[in-house]
Length: 232
Image (cartoon, rainbow, N blue to C red; front, side, top):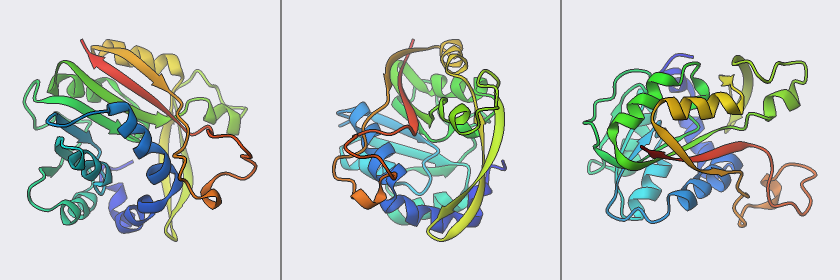
């Protein structure tokens, strides 16, 4: 998928993320819970999109820098956040324009599952973190692919393309499924130690009409897998 693929539906995607289940009521609250107190910490949002997580982190006192491969997404983020928050167009598959050890924490939420090769991106994220710094990763849960497509090989790294609708705009997104062991091997090879693996509940304030059919009284559903990694 091209780095600027989101440019064609950036506005619709940004609007959807303001109130949609998967971002507003699931991924972002869970990330904020995992990062905890970020007051005064230097935080990098890798793949910041239109900037909602950057805004949340800055509101909690973090010194946040964000980047995204989509110029349209970065433009929307700048409109949201103003000139005081550093936001730039950059590609996670290329060397990042930051100094070694520049950040205390980094977040890569719903980014890595678009990439076939994690080695370079993870190495760059490790480089820009200080020793002991944290990286929060959010990816598509690896069990979903074989559940939805039972004939697929769970243990192979494979691409798949699906249609998604964002605020009335339909777009095709291509992801790479990878088994859990391939994820953890990639983290270790890049110099990270896993401190947390999480399958969190959705936000308790989520409107019931947004939740999956048949969820009943459950407080969680299969969607994303969350990691907190420590730079060693």
